[in-house]
Length: 175
Image (cartoon, rainbow, N blue to C red):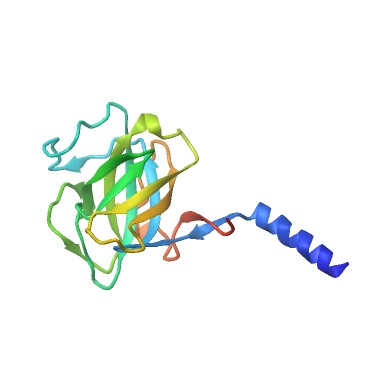
């Protein structure tokens, strides 16, 4: 009787508590936040040179990564893939502003990468799973990492210093 009750209780909590705030390991370090914003985010030094045509309806994907062991990160290291369409990184947060910066950034503090996605492909609310692809030429275990992005509407992305150390991703506990 007790075993049966414990099993039912376990099933109940597995169904009621499927997600928790967390983080995900990737090739460059640890992802602590992933947000999709429809706010008008300025990216300095960005031109369309070298990029495919930006969609008419944009949504900005902002990925917060804590680099691993003083690892250098650049905008060329990753691509996001949504429904089979790849989107390059178009900027990195430097000195409080997103910037198209082609150099590498070394840090142990959280960094934010920004991507421009087709807004028509993203629901107006909820969560969207987008794949983070490594462009580093290796076939590591982190080559395609599924990341749960939170749709935040027209709000600006959360500043790196306001994201909890244990992350804010809604990561599934049970699959």
